[in-house]
Image (cartoon, rainbow over all chains, first blue to last red; front, side):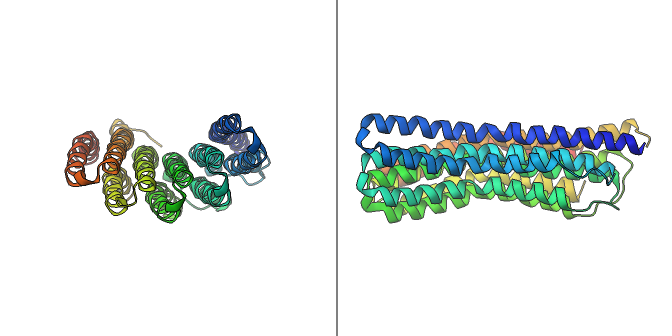
Length: 324
Length: 82
């Protein structure tokens, strides 16, 4: 039986590593490709600026790449894990860590590519604002990486925490649920924050005089969009660190797995939706100075309403963990 | 570990509740975000009508919220009634 568990541990580690890198490659590739397409468009309009634009494109792509480098790290850790310690819980841990990082890299990869693409177009339009646009681009794509960093943190906690002594029966589901909550929960916020940062870059290039107000509202919109990824991280931490009593019934396990799935999937829609709201508000604040206060208010109200379904998902997850 | 019918039903109800609310949150989240985006655009073009536009946005979002509330109701029914 010990040999059996060791075989399944290796299966889980290799499948997890494959999923981490496979899913983790999706987002960064899309984001970087989008950046390259917009850089080409900008260079075609103004070939004299090709040096600057090429540099901006590469810097932005390097940031978008980080999400998939995180996935590569987790995949490597999983492939070269130490299999000497045998525990059935490690099977779930390896699978969860791989899934978490793979899924978590999708949103940030796509999201980080969006501001960079718009920065290339913006620098072509307003070459004298190059430094300001580059700063905003760097800030925007760095913040859009944060959901992937949450997923990385969850994966590393899962890999390095010691679950020995915990009952196998509900804990395996808690581990898988934690991976899914943090991984899936990062997708929406990553894309949403990218959308907000994209219109920040566009707005500053179009209306350099309004750079300060555009930056402020962009950061505010991105912070609100981040919340659903934080809910995912929160549920993941509760699932990892709470001690669940041993339960023979499969129902207890499914409640924890359901909680993770609920929060993870439930965070996708609100994250993207809040991104749309922030994108449009930032775009019009750049164009219309007098409307700044009204637009910020509308953005926050709209984002709050879009957030509500994410909060329902959080409530159902918490009920599944603590009540069911 | 004896798996009995009642446990499987209970397990399915828990998993179903999670999936119901999770999947049910995607549509309203994106839809309400789009409504807010278009409202911001409209307010940007015509700030004088901000009150009317915000009202319309909220009513539209409330309607699109309804499916999210259905998902919540079904999840709560699965958790506490079934």
